[in-house]
Image (cartoon, rainbow, N blue to C red):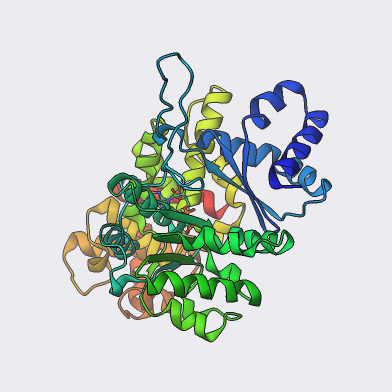
Length: 447
Ligand code: ADP
Ligand code: MG
């Protein structure tokens, strides 16, 4: 049985179990791209669809797949890139002419350089990826490895390279696959006795894009295959780009010769986005999805979700779902609810003195560096005192620890600041407003 048969069987099962309208709306439009022991990749029409199915039906889908005898652990969704596909041409008599679709099957058209928001955390990776797209096979960038944590844009960059090449050099043959798919293709070819077809399908590439090479760990025979594919392409000057969840040198379970190949070009990392980049990403994602979000809500989300762009993106989608399905306005209570669903209590431990300082800096127009610096200018000293007070109130830090966060001041200075703010709060409206705002912003995280 091939993966389509498995998928059809899965759908038959789901059809029996779900109400007809649910099945027609949410399951029928799904196509299967890969069916793997670790990940099964499903293609859905849009981002909203992906979030909805992921939240509401992924358990049922997984169960149904596994019951067909095909074992898989996770579902991944990719949004179909229909809009960028070449249009089928109508011939004179109205019969569709065969289309010459230059797009590789697994290339996701929605991941481009244009919609990849740049920040200090990913600038270098993006620049390297763009450079590769325009000068394929350049030795200093071959292979290019993009590595970093989950949800930080590695897959996005990999596909952006593919899309850029499709747009600018349409004759270039791109092969793109996850390392899981590579593994699965290889295993299937062994079963079917056609390993030479398998080799060919990868070795025809002018550009080979392989996602998540950490999955090659401990799969000796697959590594062997990959090594040969890699060498052959490399020697022909073909470009190879790979992504990984950590620096290749730190991957255990990969043969040394493979590791040294991986490291012979350029390795670049993607880091979690900083506050400003998170705000920019949220604004962009909201706009793409036609969601109007007040700026203070965007700031609020950016303050609480720090670790992955995927989280930011799916929060926007969830807000959109709530707003459109239950016809409610997007306000703070809704945002807090959505964030809570997403993160539970994880964020409570996540606020640091630095977050408080940054937030006070924003609200007082004083630079964070100045707050922890030596200046005694009135507005700086005030912002510093407020920050100290909030670190004490919200984080419960000891006075000497607080002193350390504020440029190595001693505990009496911190105590003085706390007392000063406490007494100002009795009469000073501005102090009240700033303290109130920061407490409110973070209160959700500390209840
Ligand atoms: P990774 O492969 O590193 O786990 P992905 O590339 O799958 O992460 O990114 C997760 C989601 O976040 C994707 O939908 C991607 O489009 C989006 N994303 C990640 N980084 C950015 C960015 N810098 N700008 C815009 N969208 C991004
Ligand atoms: Mg990825």
